[in-house]
Length: 130
Image (tube, rainbow, N blue to C red; front, side):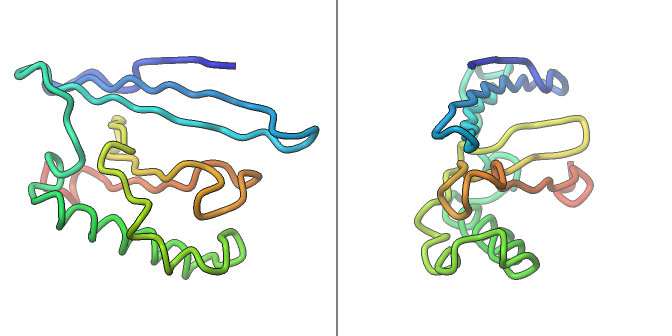
């Protein structure tokens, strides 16, 4: 089932989140997210480095480090080798804006079994200086 909604529309940005729930098996639904964040002043798609105030390389390393910390906090929720390839699966387009901050995610079944959903975390705007 595919659904879409506007999750943020403020401060010159609008974020549209598409969610698709696909049944991989009888008791194994998989969630797929696609997020699009538009800068309304330029009409361009924004990427995560726009909010981190940095280069794409820095943003990718920053996000990989945060996911590594998440894996270390709850290792049983992640594949045993997830830390070894985390840098390879970071996408600077896998984020969306909310009223509380920037949510960054990696697709389900990439670093953890899909039964745990989409691994994500939120960075409050205050931590980003926004």
